[in-house]
Length: 399
Image (cartoon, rainbow, N blue to C red; front, side, top):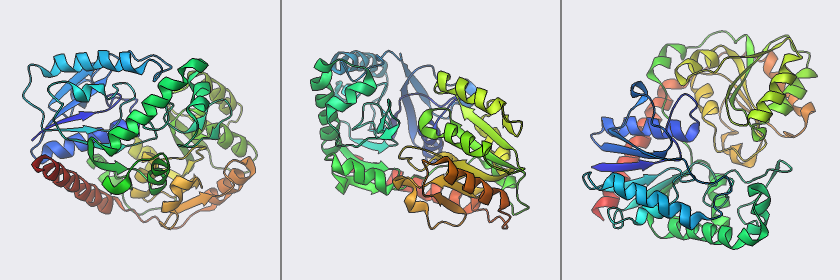
């Protein structure tokens, strides 16, 4: 079976959760005998990072205020996709994981018009032009049912663009309810929020994230003594809450150091955070860590801290930490509550208050319970997940 897998960008050393999921899925599909072509905007990964059979690269040319002007921009990308596919064997199924830099119009080019489509929604792109349902000017949470006029502030778009944004959001929901044959979401809360916007959940196959794990980490998944530092690991952007964590840490009396490892995202924000971190000798900002090296960094931590200020979609780092037996202290955002009963997972209820995180830092520092890794179980879960996806592919294509 020939699959076209599509994301907004390829997996490289700065890969986020969506790209890592796509990379893990590509490897799993290939191991099951499927041919995988990966379509995304931007440069393909270096040869040693490639898991797919083909990498089809589009230019990353969408304007910063996309979806303003979305019809023309998506039509241009669709033309490029048509040229890329013109000389290749027919695709049997398209799996869309993210479309913020590719659009969806390419699905109607002649070579894909009758091809079945499935989708995995790793964030809120289908209903939110800024992807994360966060009001950028205030950092507060938005909603999938917000007026399109409210979207213009985050996009820094003029008032007359409201119609285009409204049409784009309606097109996305209609696509999910019509063309898409099967749907995966990352959390039950995400699924519920999408339903509020009119997405039909009858097609949802699974509403909980599932990720692969690097086999090289297997020796790290052993019970042992508590780690020697606290850890923040993730994108360096305001909604991830690093500023709040640094405020809380400054007020903490913990003797454990705080290690920070980030993926570049918001340059101005990162500059401010580095300045704050440099004022406390207990804080150490690590050089950029590749995914292969994340395992040892995680395994050495007393606890992973996830102070997110937005509706997270089961962040990859939390999944990886628990697989290695590392306890997690996370903001009690609604989309993380389904993990509340998992051993080693601690929710910080008043997560917007630095004082709550100061208390959490104290609890994490004192935590010395024996580690119970779940690496083998998580690996098995992903294998079941991959089998499930292939089964859905075959049923969809057969139908």
